Image (tube, one colour):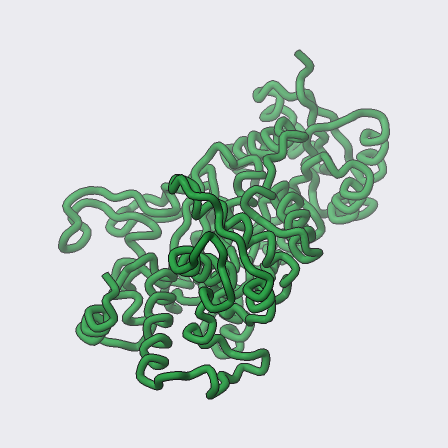
Length: 445
Protein backbone atom coordinates (compact mmCIF):
# COMPACT_ATOMS: atom_id res chain seq x y z
CA UNK A 1 0.00 0.00 0.00
CA UNK A 2 1.38 3.44 -0.97
CA UNK A 3 2.39 5.51 2.05
CA UNK A 4 0.96 8.97 2.40
CA UNK A 5 3.32 11.88 1.84
CA UNK A 6 3.81 15.23 3.60
CA UNK A 7 5.71 18.34 2.52
CA UNK A 8 7.55 20.17 5.31
CA UNK A 9 8.59 23.78 4.66
CA UNK A 10 10.82 25.49 7.25
CA UNK A 11 14.21 27.23 7.11
CA UNK A 12 15.27 25.94 10.58
CA UNK A 13 17.02 22.53 10.31
CA UNK A 14 16.05 21.55 13.88
CA UNK A 15 12.35 22.15 13.20
CA UNK A 16 12.50 20.24 9.92
CA UNK A 17 14.19 17.30 11.63
CA UNK A 18 11.66 17.26 14.48
CA UNK A 19 8.75 17.25 12.02
CA UNK A 20 10.38 14.61 9.81
CA UNK A 21 10.94 12.25 12.76
CA UNK A 22 7.42 12.73 14.17
CA UNK A 23 5.70 12.21 10.82
CA UNK A 24 8.00 9.30 9.99
CA UNK A 25 6.85 7.56 13.17
CA UNK A 26 3.29 8.07 11.91
CA UNK A 27 4.26 6.06 8.79
CA UNK A 28 4.36 9.08 6.47
CA UNK A 29 6.95 9.74 3.81
CA UNK A 30 8.25 13.31 3.98
CA UNK A 31 9.88 15.81 1.67
CA UNK A 32 11.52 18.97 3.04
CA UNK A 33 11.97 22.46 1.64
CA UNK A 34 13.85 25.43 3.08
CA UNK A 35 11.91 28.15 1.27
CA UNK A 36 8.95 28.94 -0.98
CA UNK A 37 10.94 28.24 -4.16
CA UNK A 38 11.92 24.71 -3.10
CA UNK A 39 8.37 24.02 -1.88
CA UNK A 40 6.92 24.96 -5.27
CA UNK A 41 9.46 22.70 -6.98
CA UNK A 42 8.42 19.72 -4.82
CA UNK A 43 4.73 20.46 -5.47
CA UNK A 44 5.41 20.47 -9.19
CA UNK A 45 7.19 17.08 -9.10
CA UNK A 46 5.18 15.00 -6.60
CA UNK A 47 1.72 14.73 -5.09
CA UNK A 48 1.19 15.33 -1.37
CA UNK A 49 -1.46 14.51 1.23
CA UNK A 50 -0.46 17.32 3.60
CA UNK A 51 1.77 20.40 3.79
CA UNK A 52 3.23 21.94 6.97
CA UNK A 53 4.77 25.37 6.43
CA UNK A 54 6.40 27.99 8.61
CA UNK A 55 5.01 31.51 8.36
CA UNK A 56 8.34 33.28 7.84
CA UNK A 57 10.55 31.96 5.07
CA UNK A 58 13.72 33.47 3.53
CA UNK A 59 12.14 34.24 0.15
CA UNK A 60 8.53 34.89 1.12
CA UNK A 61 5.79 33.91 3.55
CA UNK A 62 3.76 30.85 4.34
CA UNK A 63 0.66 32.81 3.30
CA UNK A 64 2.02 33.01 -0.26
CA UNK A 65 2.49 29.24 -0.23
CA UNK A 66 -1.06 28.71 1.11
CA UNK A 67 -2.45 30.82 -1.72
CA UNK A 68 -0.31 28.97 -4.30
CA UNK A 69 -1.55 25.58 -3.05
CA UNK A 70 -5.16 26.80 -2.96
CA UNK A 71 -4.90 27.75 -6.63
CA UNK A 72 -2.81 24.84 -7.98
CA UNK A 73 -3.38 21.95 -5.52
CA UNK A 74 -6.65 22.66 -3.65
CA UNK A 75 -6.97 19.04 -2.47
CA UNK A 76 -3.83 19.39 -0.27
CA UNK A 77 -4.55 20.55 3.32
CA UNK A 78 -2.01 23.15 4.52
CA UNK A 79 -1.22 23.80 8.18
CA UNK A 80 0.60 26.98 9.16
CA UNK A 81 3.30 27.05 11.86
CA UNK A 82 3.43 30.43 13.60
CA UNK A 83 5.29 32.03 16.50
CA UNK A 84 3.57 31.67 19.89
CA UNK A 85 1.03 34.42 20.44
CA UNK A 86 0.75 35.35 16.75
CA UNK A 87 -3.00 34.87 16.74
CA UNK A 88 -3.61 37.49 14.04
CA UNK A 89 -1.20 35.66 11.73
CA UNK A 90 -2.96 32.36 12.38
CA UNK A 91 -6.37 33.87 11.66
CA UNK A 92 -5.09 35.42 8.42
CA UNK A 93 -3.79 31.99 7.40
CA UNK A 94 -7.17 30.39 8.05
CA UNK A 95 -8.91 33.10 6.02
CA UNK A 96 -6.45 32.50 3.17
CA UNK A 97 -7.44 28.82 3.10
CA UNK A 98 -5.11 27.09 5.57
CA UNK A 99 -6.56 23.92 7.07
CA UNK A 100 -5.31 24.65 10.60
CA UNK A 101 -2.33 26.13 12.46
CA UNK A 102 0.30 25.22 15.05
CA UNK A 103 2.27 27.52 17.33
CA UNK A 104 5.96 27.30 18.23
CA UNK A 105 7.30 25.59 20.22
CA UNK A 106 5.47 22.74 18.47
CA UNK A 107 3.43 20.52 20.79
CA UNK A 108 3.93 17.00 19.40
CA UNK A 109 0.59 15.72 20.69
CA UNK A 110 -1.21 18.57 18.99
CA UNK A 111 0.86 17.99 15.84
CA UNK A 112 -0.15 14.32 15.69
CA UNK A 113 -3.83 15.20 16.13
CA UNK A 114 -3.65 17.82 13.37
CA UNK A 115 -1.93 15.43 10.96
CA UNK A 116 -4.42 12.64 11.66
CA UNK A 117 -7.34 15.00 11.05
CA UNK A 118 -5.83 16.30 7.81
CA UNK A 119 -5.22 12.77 6.50
CA UNK A 120 -8.82 11.77 7.28
CA UNK A 121 -9.88 14.74 5.17
CA UNK A 122 -7.79 13.48 2.26
CA UNK A 123 -9.01 9.88 2.57
CA UNK A 124 -12.64 11.02 2.46
CA UNK A 125 -12.17 13.04 -0.75
CA UNK A 126 -14.80 12.11 -3.29
CA UNK A 127 -17.06 10.67 -0.56
CA UNK A 128 -19.04 13.81 0.16
CA UNK A 129 -22.36 13.15 1.85
CA UNK A 130 -25.32 14.73 0.07
CA UNK A 131 -26.63 17.83 1.82
CA UNK A 132 -29.61 18.36 -0.50
CA UNK A 133 -31.88 15.89 1.29
CA UNK A 134 -32.05 18.17 4.35
CA UNK A 135 -30.97 21.59 3.12
CA UNK A 136 -33.76 22.07 0.62
CA UNK A 137 -34.10 24.65 -2.13
CA UNK A 138 -32.94 25.30 -5.68
CA UNK A 139 -32.73 29.09 -5.41
CA UNK A 140 -29.35 30.79 -6.06
CA UNK A 141 -28.83 31.60 -2.34
CA UNK A 142 -29.30 27.94 -1.37
CA UNK A 143 -27.05 26.63 -4.13
CA UNK A 144 -24.36 29.06 -2.96
CA UNK A 145 -24.88 27.99 0.66
CA UNK A 146 -24.43 24.30 -0.15
CA UNK A 147 -21.23 25.09 -2.06
CA UNK A 148 -19.89 27.12 0.89
CA UNK A 149 -20.69 24.29 3.32
CA UNK A 150 -18.61 21.84 1.28
CA UNK A 151 -15.70 24.29 1.16
CA UNK A 152 -15.79 25.15 4.88
CA UNK A 153 -15.99 21.46 5.82
CA UNK A 154 -12.41 21.07 4.55
CA UNK A 155 -11.10 23.67 7.00
CA UNK A 156 -10.72 23.75 10.77
CA UNK A 157 -11.36 27.51 10.88
CA UNK A 158 -14.00 28.73 13.34
CA UNK A 159 -17.20 29.68 11.50
CA UNK A 160 -19.81 32.22 12.63
CA UNK A 161 -23.20 31.24 11.18
CA UNK A 162 -25.51 34.25 10.99
CA UNK A 163 -29.20 34.24 10.23
CA UNK A 164 -32.67 34.75 11.66
CA UNK A 165 -34.40 32.40 14.09
CA UNK A 166 -35.87 29.40 12.30
CA UNK A 167 -33.66 29.71 9.21
CA UNK A 168 -31.74 26.48 9.86
CA UNK A 169 -28.43 27.55 11.44
CA UNK A 170 -27.99 24.39 13.52
CA UNK A 171 -28.64 22.22 10.46
CA UNK A 172 -25.94 24.15 8.56
CA UNK A 173 -23.49 23.62 11.45
CA UNK A 174 -24.28 19.91 11.54
CA UNK A 175 -23.71 19.59 7.78
CA UNK A 176 -20.32 21.35 8.02
CA UNK A 177 -19.37 18.78 10.67
CA UNK A 178 -20.68 15.79 8.72
CA UNK A 179 -18.85 16.80 5.52
CA UNK A 180 -15.51 17.24 7.28
CA UNK A 181 -12.75 15.02 8.69
CA UNK A 182 -14.32 15.05 12.17
CA UNK A 183 -17.54 13.42 10.96
CA UNK A 184 -16.94 10.19 12.93
CA UNK A 185 -16.45 12.18 16.15
CA UNK A 186 -19.11 13.92 18.31
CA UNK A 187 -21.15 16.92 17.22
CA UNK A 188 -22.17 18.69 20.43
CA UNK A 189 -24.74 21.51 20.11
CA UNK A 190 -25.35 23.81 23.07
CA UNK A 191 -27.84 26.64 23.41
CA UNK A 192 -25.87 29.28 25.34
CA UNK A 193 -29.06 31.14 26.29
CA UNK A 194 -30.58 28.08 27.98
CA UNK A 195 -27.86 27.51 30.60
CA UNK A 196 -28.31 29.27 33.98
CA UNK A 197 -25.43 31.68 34.59
CA UNK A 198 -24.32 30.02 37.80
CA UNK A 199 -23.96 26.62 36.05
CA UNK A 200 -22.20 27.80 32.89
CA UNK A 201 -18.61 27.11 33.88
CA UNK A 202 -19.51 23.63 35.09
CA UNK A 203 -21.51 22.89 31.92
CA UNK A 204 -18.73 24.00 29.59
CA UNK A 205 -15.66 22.71 31.45
CA UNK A 206 -17.00 20.06 33.86
CA UNK A 207 -16.50 19.86 37.63
CA UNK A 208 -14.89 17.70 40.27
CA UNK A 209 -16.77 15.91 43.03
CA UNK A 210 -17.29 18.18 46.02
CA UNK A 211 -16.30 21.38 44.20
CA UNK A 212 -19.66 22.96 45.11
CA UNK A 213 -22.93 22.03 46.79
CA UNK A 214 -24.62 19.38 44.71
CA UNK A 215 -21.44 18.19 42.96
CA UNK A 216 -21.81 14.58 44.12
CA UNK A 217 -19.56 13.15 41.40
CA UNK A 218 -17.11 14.19 38.70
CA UNK A 219 -18.85 15.55 35.60
CA UNK A 220 -17.53 15.92 32.06
CA UNK A 221 -18.03 19.31 30.41
CA UNK A 222 -19.20 20.11 26.89
CA UNK A 223 -15.65 20.75 25.66
CA UNK A 224 -14.52 17.31 26.85
CA UNK A 225 -17.64 15.70 25.36
CA UNK A 226 -16.83 17.25 21.96
CA UNK A 227 -13.14 16.21 22.03
CA UNK A 228 -12.05 15.24 18.53
CA UNK A 229 -15.27 16.62 17.07
CA UNK A 230 -17.24 19.86 16.82
CA UNK A 231 -18.73 22.12 19.48
CA UNK A 232 -21.62 24.23 18.17
CA UNK A 233 -22.35 27.31 20.30
CA UNK A 234 -25.87 28.39 19.40
CA UNK A 235 -27.07 31.85 20.53
CA UNK A 236 -23.49 32.66 21.54
CA UNK A 237 -24.41 36.35 21.97
CA UNK A 238 -26.34 35.36 25.12
CA UNK A 239 -23.17 34.43 27.01
CA UNK A 240 -22.49 36.79 29.95
CA UNK A 241 -19.22 38.73 29.79
CA UNK A 242 -17.40 36.76 32.56
CA UNK A 243 -18.08 33.52 30.68
CA UNK A 244 -16.90 35.08 27.42
CA UNK A 245 -13.46 35.61 29.01
CA UNK A 246 -13.23 31.95 30.05
CA UNK A 247 -14.45 30.74 26.67
CA UNK A 248 -11.84 32.87 24.87
CA UNK A 249 -9.05 31.38 26.98
CA UNK A 250 -10.27 27.82 26.37
CA UNK A 251 -10.32 28.40 22.61
CA UNK A 252 -6.89 30.04 22.53
CA UNK A 253 -5.15 27.57 24.84
CA UNK A 254 -7.02 24.50 23.51
CA UNK A 255 -7.30 23.38 27.13
CA UNK A 256 -9.89 23.55 29.92
CA UNK A 257 -9.84 23.21 33.69
CA UNK A 258 -12.82 21.64 35.46
CA UNK A 259 -14.39 23.54 38.35
CA UNK A 260 -12.51 22.40 41.45
CA UNK A 261 -9.76 20.79 39.37
CA UNK A 262 -6.03 21.49 39.55
CA UNK A 263 -4.92 20.28 36.12
CA UNK A 264 -5.85 21.51 32.66
CA UNK A 265 -7.15 19.01 30.11
CA UNK A 266 -6.12 19.41 26.47
CA UNK A 267 -9.14 19.46 24.14
CA UNK A 268 -9.24 19.21 20.37
CA UNK A 269 -12.51 20.72 19.11
CA UNK A 270 -13.61 22.73 16.13
CA UNK A 271 -15.76 25.69 17.14
CA UNK A 272 -18.85 26.69 15.18
CA UNK A 273 -21.19 29.35 16.55
CA UNK A 274 -24.44 31.09 15.66
CA UNK A 275 -26.84 33.74 16.84
CA UNK A 276 -29.89 35.49 15.43
CA UNK A 277 -28.56 38.76 16.86
CA UNK A 278 -26.22 41.18 15.09
CA UNK A 279 -22.97 40.10 16.73
CA UNK A 280 -21.02 43.12 15.46
CA UNK A 281 -23.74 45.32 16.96
CA UNK A 282 -23.40 43.47 20.28
CA UNK A 283 -19.67 44.26 20.20
CA UNK A 284 -20.39 47.95 19.54
CA UNK A 285 -22.83 47.96 22.46
CA UNK A 286 -20.08 46.40 24.64
CA UNK A 287 -22.23 43.35 25.38
CA UNK A 288 -19.83 41.03 23.54
CA UNK A 289 -16.04 41.02 23.75
CA UNK A 290 -14.28 42.20 20.62
CA UNK A 291 -11.36 39.76 21.04
CA UNK A 292 -13.77 36.81 21.29
CA UNK A 293 -15.72 38.12 18.30
CA UNK A 294 -12.59 38.12 16.11
CA UNK A 295 -11.64 34.65 17.36
CA UNK A 296 -15.07 33.18 16.53
CA UNK A 297 -15.77 35.18 13.37
CA UNK A 298 -12.82 33.97 11.29
CA UNK A 299 -15.27 33.11 8.52
CA UNK A 300 -18.90 34.23 8.43
CA UNK A 301 -21.56 32.12 6.74
CA UNK A 302 -24.98 33.70 6.22
CA UNK A 303 -28.08 31.50 6.13
CA UNK A 304 -30.74 33.29 4.04
CA UNK A 305 -34.18 34.02 5.45
CA UNK A 306 -37.11 32.32 3.74
CA UNK A 307 -38.33 35.63 2.28
CA UNK A 308 -34.91 35.95 0.57
CA UNK A 309 -35.63 32.75 -1.39
CA UNK A 310 -39.37 32.76 -2.03
CA UNK A 311 -38.91 30.56 -5.11
CA UNK A 312 -38.14 27.65 -2.74
CA UNK A 313 -41.48 27.85 -0.90
CA UNK A 314 -43.40 25.57 -3.31
CA UNK A 315 -40.74 22.82 -3.09
CA UNK A 316 -40.45 23.13 0.70
CA UNK A 317 -44.22 22.96 1.12
CA UNK A 318 -44.51 19.88 -1.10
CA UNK A 319 -41.82 17.97 0.80
CA UNK A 320 -43.15 19.02 4.20
CA UNK A 321 -46.67 17.87 3.31
CA UNK A 322 -45.29 14.50 2.16
CA UNK A 323 -43.53 14.10 5.49
CA UNK A 324 -46.72 14.95 7.38
CA UNK A 325 -48.62 12.25 5.47
CA UNK A 326 -46.00 9.55 6.15
CA UNK A 327 -47.24 6.97 8.61
CA UNK A 328 -50.86 8.17 8.47
CA UNK A 329 -51.91 6.00 5.54
CA UNK A 330 -53.30 9.12 3.89
CA UNK A 331 -52.19 10.73 0.67
CA UNK A 332 -50.26 14.03 0.98
CA UNK A 333 -52.36 17.17 0.88
CA UNK A 334 -51.99 19.56 -2.05
CA UNK A 335 -51.84 23.33 -1.94
CA UNK A 336 -54.41 25.25 -3.96
CA UNK A 337 -52.99 27.95 -6.19
CA UNK A 338 -54.43 30.68 -3.97
CA UNK A 339 -52.84 29.08 -0.89
CA UNK A 340 -49.45 28.92 -2.59
CA UNK A 341 -49.72 32.57 -3.63
CA UNK A 342 -50.58 33.50 -0.03
CA UNK A 343 -47.48 31.69 1.20
CA UNK A 344 -45.26 33.33 -1.40
CA UNK A 345 -46.45 36.81 -0.41
CA UNK A 346 -46.15 36.20 3.36
CA UNK A 347 -43.12 37.63 5.15
CA UNK A 348 -42.35 34.57 7.34
CA UNK A 349 -40.72 36.16 10.40
CA UNK A 350 -40.30 32.62 11.76
CA UNK A 351 -38.74 31.33 8.53
CA UNK A 352 -38.72 27.60 7.67
CA UNK A 353 -39.81 26.61 11.17
CA UNK A 354 -42.88 28.82 10.87
CA UNK A 355 -43.75 27.39 7.44
CA UNK A 356 -43.56 23.87 8.86
CA UNK A 357 -45.83 24.72 11.80
CA UNK A 358 -48.27 26.52 9.50
CA UNK A 359 -48.54 23.56 7.13
CA UNK A 360 -48.98 21.08 9.97
CA UNK A 361 -51.94 23.10 11.24
CA UNK A 362 -53.40 23.48 7.74
CA UNK A 363 -52.98 19.74 7.06
CA UNK A 364 -55.10 19.02 10.14
CA UNK A 365 -57.83 21.50 9.17
CA UNK A 366 -58.12 20.90 5.43
CA UNK A 367 -60.84 18.91 3.65
CA UNK A 368 -60.37 16.38 0.81
CA UNK A 369 -56.57 16.68 0.96
CA UNK A 370 -56.72 20.20 -0.46
CA UNK A 371 -55.27 23.14 1.46
CA UNK A 372 -56.96 26.42 0.63
CA UNK A 373 -55.83 29.92 1.56
CA UNK A 374 -58.34 29.87 4.42
CA UNK A 375 -56.80 26.71 5.91
CA UNK A 376 -53.50 28.56 6.31
CA UNK A 377 -55.15 31.02 8.73
CA UNK A 378 -52.74 33.73 7.76
CA UNK A 379 -55.25 36.29 9.07
CA UNK A 380 -55.08 34.68 12.50
CA UNK A 381 -51.33 34.43 12.26
CA UNK A 382 -51.26 38.19 11.68
CA UNK A 383 -48.04 38.21 9.79
CA UNK A 384 -46.67 41.71 9.25
CA UNK A 385 -46.61 43.19 5.79
CA UNK A 386 -43.37 43.95 3.97
CA UNK A 387 -43.21 47.34 5.69
CA UNK A 388 -43.54 45.65 9.09
CA UNK A 389 -47.11 46.83 9.79
CA UNK A 390 -50.21 44.72 10.52
CA UNK A 391 -53.38 45.84 8.80
CA UNK A 392 -56.45 46.51 11.01
CA UNK A 393 -58.48 44.55 8.47
CA UNK A 394 -56.62 41.44 9.61
CA UNK A 395 -57.86 41.73 13.22
CA UNK A 396 -61.31 40.29 13.93
CA UNK A 397 -61.02 40.33 17.73
CA UNK A 398 -58.41 42.34 19.64
CA UNK A 399 -58.25 39.94 22.61
CA UNK A 400 -57.78 36.92 20.34
CA UNK A 401 -55.19 38.82 18.32
CA UNK A 402 -53.15 39.73 21.41
CA UNK A 403 -53.43 36.16 22.71
CA UNK A 404 -52.13 34.82 19.38
CA UNK A 405 -49.14 37.18 19.54
CA UNK A 406 -48.43 36.17 23.15
CA UNK A 407 -48.65 32.47 22.32
CA UNK A 408 -46.36 32.87 19.32
CA UNK A 409 -43.68 34.74 21.30
CA UNK A 410 -43.78 32.24 24.17
CA UNK A 411 -43.56 29.27 21.79
CA UNK A 412 -40.61 30.86 20.01
CA UNK A 413 -38.79 31.45 23.32
CA UNK A 414 -39.47 27.86 24.42
CA UNK A 415 -38.21 26.43 21.13
CA UNK A 416 -35.07 28.57 21.18
CA UNK A 417 -34.28 27.42 24.76
CA UNK A 418 -35.17 23.77 24.06
CA UNK A 419 -38.21 24.04 26.35
CA UNK A 420 -36.25 25.24 29.34
CA UNK A 421 -39.04 27.28 30.99
CA UNK A 422 -36.74 29.19 33.32
CA UNK A 423 -34.49 30.30 30.45
CA UNK A 424 -37.52 31.13 28.27
CA UNK A 425 -38.97 33.29 31.05
CA UNK A 426 -35.65 35.16 31.39
CA UNK A 427 -35.54 35.73 27.63
CA UNK A 428 -39.05 37.22 27.72
CA UNK A 429 -38.34 39.33 30.83
CA UNK A 430 -40.90 37.41 32.92
CA UNK A 431 -40.72 35.92 36.39
CA UNK A 432 -41.07 32.14 36.49
CA UNK A 433 -44.39 32.51 38.32
CA UNK A 434 -45.73 34.82 35.58
CA UNK A 435 -44.45 32.43 32.90
CA UNK A 436 -46.22 29.49 34.55
CA UNK A 437 -49.48 31.46 34.71
CA UNK A 438 -49.31 32.35 31.00
CA UNK A 439 -48.54 28.75 29.99
CA UNK A 440 -51.61 27.56 31.89
CA UNK A 441 -53.81 30.34 30.48
CA UNK A 442 -52.78 29.63 26.90
CA UNK A 443 -52.99 25.86 27.28
CA UNK A 444 -49.31 25.27 26.44
CA UNK A 445 -48.19 22.05 28.07
